[in-house]
Image (cartoon, rainbow, N blue to C red):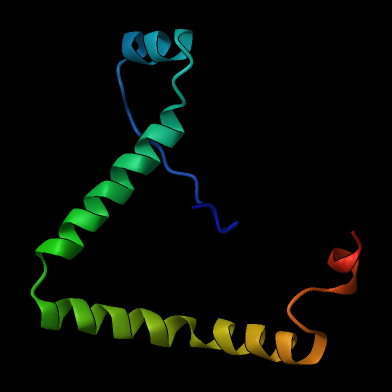
Length: 87
């Protein structure tokens, strides 16, 4: 899922492996992102329910200002802008 918020990270892999991956069209960034997402889900699944709920609440509080801005925008302009309503 690409929400437009991206970060650049540096990872080290052997040159030979990177070259082989490139030759067959493997997107290393995509593979790394998928692996990280899968590991994140595995860690969340292994968390005790109370710890997982505390993390969910922390994230919700962190993103609450964005949620409120989005809701205010939708209330003022509707779900889609006029630019997107043209068919």
